[in-house]
Image (cartoon, rainbow, N blue to C red):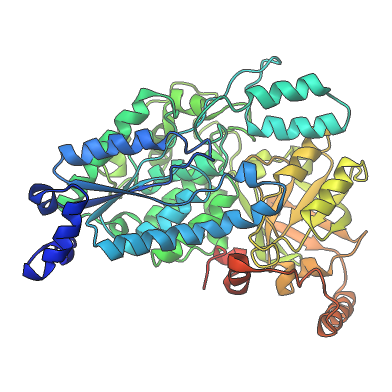
Length: 561
């Protein structure tokens, strides 16, 4: 046991004394030490119930012969942080989460780990820590929020409220309608109910094999979620006994499986950012071209919000993640031979999976589209890549050319959108919002939702070196790399320049000749040398100052080097 370092021998009598001060006896001290990493807090609706999840895990660990130790890590609600300076802190918490878990686990010599995440940055931050620590590990999330049917007969989610703001600004709805969405779109605990970033990552935990079946889809309020947590506690002890560690699960082939499921489900664009970062911790390289290779051969089988009308509870009732994986395995698009934390292979896990609703989960022979839900675009505007959720793009916007409307911050763009200054055909450019320039790569759900709420999502595109919420729909292209703050071509775009978007051919181009761009770059560099570049010299302090200095490009996962 790793915990022997803190509890065995005469020299460790002081350590045992401290452990006994917590209420443990010799019997408990002699057992394996299992860390329960809980992201509970009272601010985040996806996390307010995680104490119950942790208690169930604790019971499972004790029943299986381990001694549980619960500790907490931080969690930011992207929805609450969105649209103001708070969003600068969301992505940077991913690195903090990984680092603080590493410190706790190694300082106290724990033997195995159960991670309890739920929302956006917490899942990847914990997965990064799991790969780094390489202990017997299992994940059990808090589960998705329910989605209620609104007065118009459609299911609601958080995005419904954001789009209602756009509709209100356009005069399409009044105070009563806006208040109705505010009161009913988020009915209780759980991660937001669409295939947004949190639920995407929790489903991908099943894909890589580090979570039990149901982790991504069992609603937060269902008793099955408690049963899953208890089983996770028992199963982590079995992993410890068998010596199965995180990197036995997080293999190169497992990450390819994750990308295949990503494409089939139509997950959030943020998954590319996070999978790249997690893989790096596991010693695995995910070049962005690999995303397109897998997307080309993997059909999109699900259209969950924001790409379609269905929500996580619908996917759960339709058979869950395993029902999707079973079809991919049968089609030779998913490696069924890989090990998982169940103690069985992927193929064994999904052998009895059944699809109960063919509208929610299409067959491979009749998909929503023959290619995957995400695409990485390259071109003169994005030499190192940009990411789009193509399953949420209207067919008429898959290819588009239009004049650039350039803004150096999200706030400037929102003001222009809300005041009616954006017209059909425009390409909204939001820059200096990348990992270093933001800093923190803010999500642009407010401007994209305003565009959609105004009915312009089939006529207006938005491109940014920032990123998007998983709830974003429309021709929204993010993660443009290199970012503006690091001298990327997006910094050279001027009002009225024509931008060409060609998603089927994975292209994003600025239609300005090289000579003109070179002149603009020389002018930009001269301003910077003279100290006139105020946009790229934002006053920063504290953690954000350190983060902006050290963070890598989005094309490399926006990791801290």
